[in-house]
Image (tube, rainbow, N blue to C red; front, top):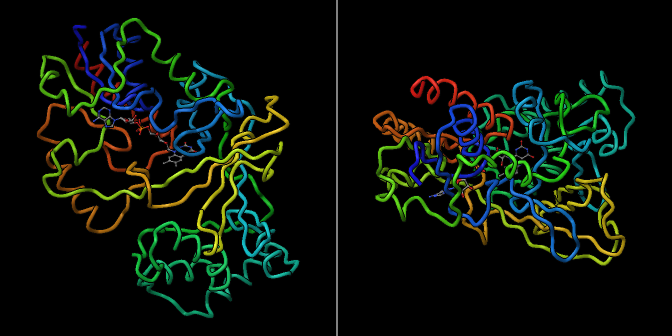
Length: 376
Ligand SMILES: Cc1cc2nc3c(=O)[nH]c(=O)nc-3n(C[C@H](O)[C@H](O)[C@H](O)COP(=O)(O)OP(=O)(O)OC[C@H]3O[C@@H](n4cnc5c(N)ncnc54)[C@H](O)[C@@H]3O)c2cc1C
């Protein structure tokens, strides 16, 4: 196919760009992805053992308050009305997350009113007298006090990072939300939230349906880079450092691993995501995707769950690590980007964590400001 544009990566950034070029500009796009599927990390598929729709790269919930993101997404799907809630198990008891009034009262066995709880937590924080936190542990204690830190943050962080929080830089966390009310909806400010009625993958199928888009899966840009050196504009959403052959060194990512298990019960844990704060449980979270689609009639005999562990068994880049060293490398790579004709974008191309709505908005902006004006 003669293409006007080459888009590397069929996740939300690449998908939105390809859709806009094909439908708004009427130009031909070659969209490649090294994986065997579209959708990037938002890819969903039906589990062959249970018929339950699962999210291969971790539970994804769409949530936004940005009308532009919602207006764009709703062209391809309706949402199913799912509201996200997160729970955490600590010492065999279940608490609400992020920490709210219910968590505080239940943990301390108190019945504080919001204004009393605020004072109470402030006094817990002041007991430690930390004004300049030197590491993640001190930072967390300076935000919520020691007992809540030791119960809900310490063990979880050790499992997430495989390091003691005293060895982790304070800048990894900027805040730990504490709600002094009983609000238990996780995405409390989202005007729109839920799961696409027919799953995320169908959103991408519809988005990429134009005959102007040619899709090549199992196609790694770096194996074919020279073939693509044709007169078409490239939009690259793969890893930033890889594009420059890791010239300054590798940008580090935190990775997670998922282990599937089919359970012979209708409902295993009563919720889609359960955190495990105790250091003894080796997994950080257990996902049960049947709860993401309460509107569907799934099997009553079995369910599927995924144990999530951190930092082992997978090379997938999931979360950027904002240490000083990584941010220094990032600045150096960004200098190289300025000299390239290629357009970089998406979470891998920017070395950033973006929610889906922010990724879509960034892609729409990129199309409007960088691609459309040059083409017209
Ligand atoms: C565990 C986890 C849970 C998340 N949950 C949520 C959530 O609940 N809600 C939310 O809004 N957001 C969530 N996100 C964020 C969401 O995944 C991102 O916003 C979204 O995936 C970003 O899209 P993208 O196109 O930038 O990147 P990706 O989806 O990663 O797509 C990039 C694509 O580029 C391809 N690629 C890379 N290198 C090459 C190459 N050399 N050649 C060809 N192709 C290549 C990759 O295979 C990939 O398909 C979550 C993220 C993680 C890690």
